[in-house]
Image (tube, rainbow, N blue to C red; front, side, top):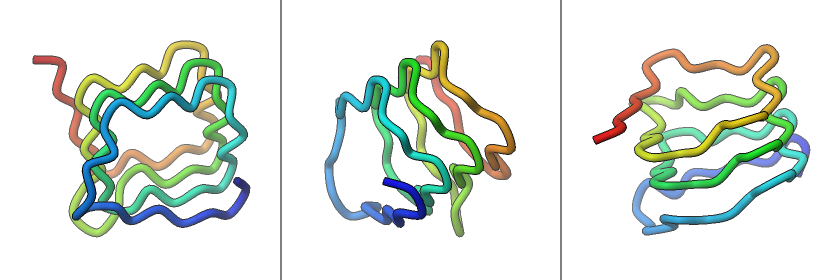
Amino acid sequence: MPSAFFNDSHDDDSRVNLTGANLEGANFSNSGLYQFDFTNANLKNTNLSGFEHAFLAGACLIGADLSDTCFITGYFNDA
């Protein structure tokens, strides 16, 4: 999904499994990424910040390539 744009702030896309996915350059602008699984995913040059924030509650980033990934105003919540 190189250069893909995701803006699902009005959708409930919780618990999506993207293990090992190539998401290089993707833009998760203002997305609700609740419990997304990015284990071993390629998130290089990915935008996880968005206009307001990308909501990453419970997202798994173990082993993900986060090189040059933008987290500005990203919101993490492990509660």
